[in-house]
Image 1 (cartoon, rainbow, N blue to C red):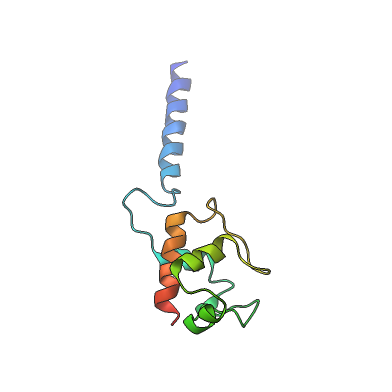
Image 2: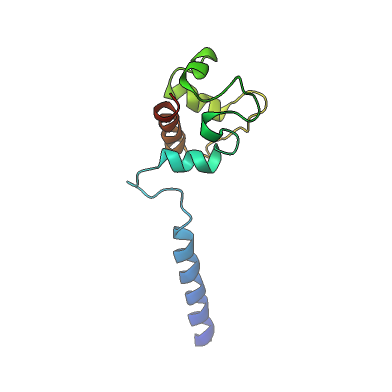
Length: 110
């Protein structure tokens, strides 16, 4: 009985420790917009381009031409995009991550 309890406690401890590494962010931890962009966006938007629709890149002039003028607009597109783009809800990309991605896009693809 004691051996079973010790084994169970050890397994629980390993699971808890291992799962801590899979948290999206820890409180107070800065989110890398670049890393989140590479994780969620770069496959379809390499270098700020667009593999699906070349008329809708992430470059400032084209974003503006498509009615996307602010970080808030970019986040809105992340949450509710047009045809051809995957929808990312808060389960996939947290609000803080979406904001970091939007700010990265604005700074990077001028």
